[in-house]
Structures are given as C-alpha cells and as structure tokens.
Length: 356
Ligand code: KDG
Image (cartoon, rainbow, N blue to C red; front, side):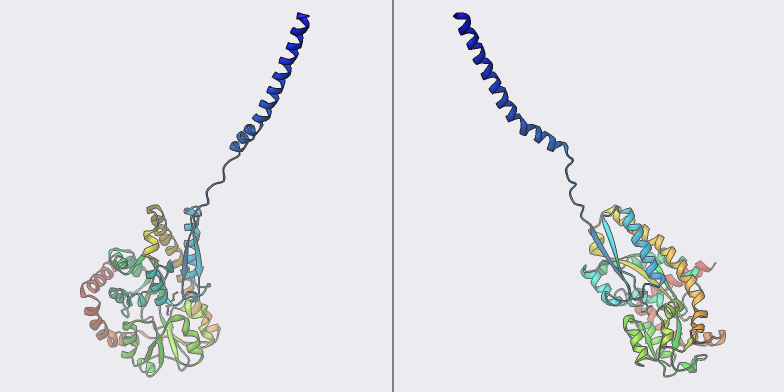
C-alpha cells in the first residue's frame, strides 16, 4: 500500500516537473528569438551627403567644364561619398556676377568666373585685366600661382568667397560681324561686348570702339540680333560656343590674358572639416593643371577650325599691337591708383622676376 502510494506520488511529482519544464521551455522561446535578433547586424545610420552645386557660364564642351568634372571626380572619391558635386554649365545657375552673389549668400557652393567680374567684389583683381599684362602663359602661371596671386585670393574671404586656385580662360581675341580688323582705325565705332569690368570697358573706348558690358549668357543672342557687332574671347570659347555662326571676322589681338578663379562659398567652406578643406584645395590644383593643359591645346587648334567654319582671320602686326599698347597706357595709369598702386607694383615686379 505504502509502496503504491509512494509510486503514485512519484508519478505526480514527475508530471508536475514535466509541466513546469514545458512552461519554462515555452517561456524561454522568445528569449532565444531576442538573442537571434541581436545577432543580426544593425542598420548603419544614414551618412549625411553634402552637395556642391558648381556653375559656370561656358558650355560643357569647354576645358573649364572638363576641369570641373576632374574636380568632382577627385572630391567625391576622396571624401568617400560624403560630398557630391553637381555641375551646371551654360549659365544654368546664372552669370558670373549672379553666381558670386549666390556664393556670398550660401545658396550656391561653387563657381569659376573670369577675374574681370571678380574685380567688382575685390578691386585689386582689376590688375589681372590690364591690357597686355602677361606676355605668355608660363609667366602668368608663375605669377598667379605665386605669392602675389595668393595675396589677392586672400582678399576674397572678406567678401564671403574662398579662392581655391587660378584656372585659365586664356588670351582674348576680337571677333565681329562687320569688317576685318587689322589696324587701330578698324576698331572705330564697332559695338563690342565686354565683360562687366571698367578696365575692359575703358580700354575698348580708348581704342575707338563702342563697348557695352554684358553678362556672358546673353552674348550669343546679342550678336545674333545685332545688338552688338562683336566680342572678345579666347579661340576655345569662340569655337566651342559656336560664335562663328554669328561672327565673320577674327583678329589675333591677344590684348589680355584672362584668368579664372575657382571659388567656393565661404559658408560652405566653414561648414567643412579641415580634412575636406584640404581635399578641396588639392583637387582644385590637380584639376587646374588638367584644365590649363586642355585649354592650351584647345586655344592652339581652334583658330584653324574657325577659318574652316568660314571666318576671316586677320593678323595683328607687332607695330599695330605696339600702337594699341600705347593707346591703353593711360588707362593702366588711371587704374593703378584705383586698384591699389602697391598691388600693381607687386604684380609687375613678379612678372619681371618670372621672365628672368
Ligand atoms: O564660365 C566662365 C564664363 O562665365 C565667363 O567668365 C567667360 O570669358 C568669359 C566672358 O567673356 O564672360
């Protein structure tokens, strides 16, 4: 009897233990799942991508655009996707002045204007647009990439702009739809579009032309409609912007070497890390060398292409160029004080040094 009772008790205990084990087992299930969940890797927090909108007035065939594409490639690769560069050409974001103003406001991040319109923001930049200043590209490179070039770039931050590097637009040549220009007399009365810059304007006035300043994106239509008879730009621009469709004469006036400045909004610069700033500066310089090389190749080959397109080429003799130089001398003298005699002297001295 006792034995029987004992075995019944035993069975009961076993049943209870089994039930407990089952309950415990069920309860443990979610824990296992939780453990499983923890094993699966957590989703990475999304990286914030900052956008640089870089705009220019020239089209996407121009070496300037190709230089920007190089800058984009380097920056995107070196910042490991943290910065994306979007390129806008043909004045899609506005003309040089409008884009520089947008950089000041921080509503656009980069642009690459000629020095001529920059002079409306920092007057010392006028010096680089003095007629016949640089004798050749090599001297221009040395001066622009040297201490005096940097001194001028250092004036941009006060205006909310950061100058990363000088790129090249190149030696400018005259085109028009009226007549072949071979002598100073031939300039007389020609309605010439100039960049928005006082030195350019007064130099053309002194040469007897009838100059009118105008933003680049309006130029083609102005020539097409006859609002102006002509303009002046390097051969690469004249050809790649198809100015030959609305212009019949080209003269190798080479009256000024026109630099570009690749610039960034100071706001965007200040919001970037020191490592990113270093990447921007290095990329600007690598892309500069690439852009200058392409630009020189382009300027060397496009005069022949312009002739093939039907333009008449007129050579400006050394005598005529010397005469032009004499005529614009007083303009240079006049602007020397306006621009800052100290800066002007430094630039001329640097040019002298670079030629030694
Ligand atoms: O992209 C640069 C242009 O906007 C402009 O600077 C070109 O040389 C130029 C001009 O004549 O306005």
